[in-house]
Image 1 (cartoon, one colour):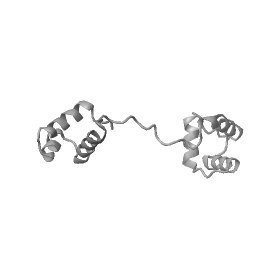
Image 2 (cartoon, one colour; image 1 turned 135 degrees about the vertical axis):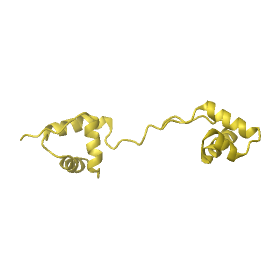
Image 3 (cartoon, helix red, strand yellow; image 1 turned 180 degrees about the vertical axis):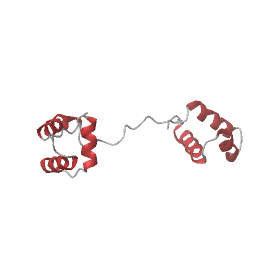
Image 4 (cartoon, helix red, strand yellow; image 1 turned 30 degrees about the horizontal axis):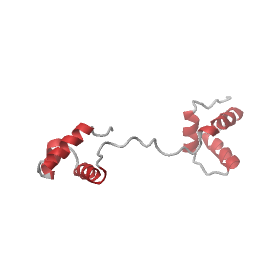
Length: 117
């Protein structure tokens, strides 16, 4: 879902400034009352009501500096399952990552499991 445009936010706040009741603003512009309150408070407190840039998500548990090490680990144990890779990674790095986390890191690198049989 993308953020509401600055143009819409300006029109909503202008309608509010003209004295239109909040309930009418919400129904006219098809926005939530929470959004209206948030935009109004942001403009009042900082003068800015534009959408914030994306945060980029949470920090990765297996950093880009560790990718070469993970590639080497997967290459050394191509038959291992994700659970086995996780167990070995956690033992080598004194971490407690979940199999999902290790699996996502492996997929992010484009690596696949090679079965020998």
